[in-house]
Length: 259
Picture 1 (cartoon, rainbow, N blue to C red):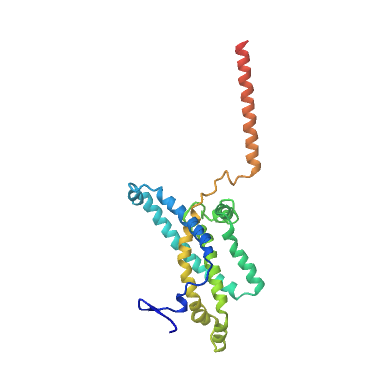
Picture 2 (cartoon, one colour):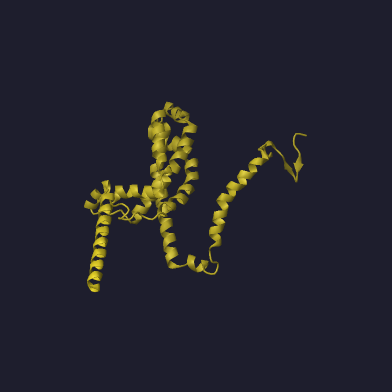
């Protein structure tokens, strides 16, 4: 017999447990604990008596509604911007694709605070685009639009990299065949390329929707954090001088009272 039966199920090669060394279970369990135990500790700090009241409070409801709205808007922006960008990278040359892929990967390695400061320097009141938009009466910092932009900045690389890898794996053979049969570029895009890109894109949409709200978790940089170092140094010197002068005056007043 090529395969046995257990409970009416025929064992196949796919059901085989494999030949992974059992000693690797130790670091696997440690890695799983590193992911699960902090979450358990976080849930353990929740007070069961007040959790329902906290979740159903008007403040929590407004925050959840805002997070849902911004996450959906950021996901739509990632699809509109990420699919063309992934197509461009997948169909570009080797050098061009490497450069574009490196640029897309930059937001993944930046700390959230650094990304927030970069967006503030771009869309702030004195930023490159913020100054021009301010003259037109458009204000972006500390608005819902800014939250959507920050979420798109964080979630877009996940969609682009996954979709670009899937498109590069499928190749351009189907597109070349459709072009040989007389199909135009737009017809190839909607009838061949996008149907091939739909499965990986749909699989990354939940990732973008879940990853996007984390962009607004970092506190926005304050004006003091973005203030030039020279101004902070001057203010520190002036404060120090005023403190020294105050101490001298207090000493003089004490000496006079003693005399």
